[in-house]
Image 1 (tube, rainbow, N blue to C red):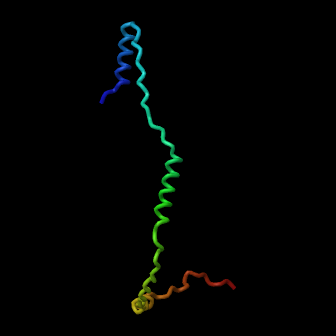
Image 2: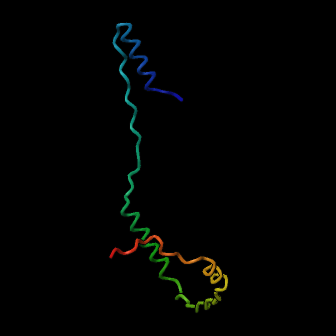
Length: 97
């Protein structure tokens, strides 16, 4: 990697240390860039998309298959419910007369 900033800074420091005037630095030539009209590109894309959709055939509709019904297995759940004893209300304080 070539660090132009560091080289220019080192030359400037050397020139100041020697007591001479630093050499002027040439500004880089600006890069030319092609200007693109984004709105024109968007309009073109939209018109192409509309044209590609309008030539198609009508969509066909199909009936969906019915869902299979599953049976519930409640025997296992009932056994678990019977195994758990009910909580007693021992935590309550008796009423005061």
